[in-house]
Length: 71
Image (cartoon, rainbow, N blue to C red):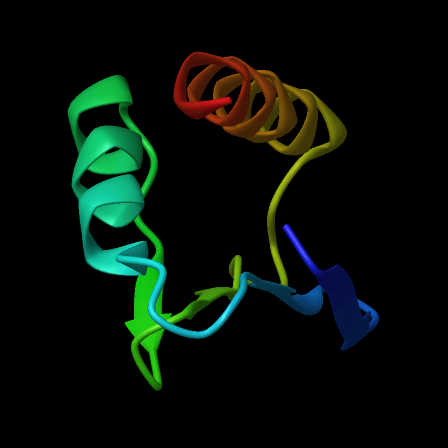
């Protein structure tokens, strides 16, 4: 992973050029979280503005688990 960027709830994780972010998005989907691959190597997260703190924490746990699995 190269970095994280964003503002408020709109965030993206940027990977090195050539990284298949689509595969990570599919793993996130299988774990219960939808994310969008952008420009091939970027994963964009855009939760609804009405997300609860519990839902946010559940989403972060899913992201952490999937990212740990791809490490």
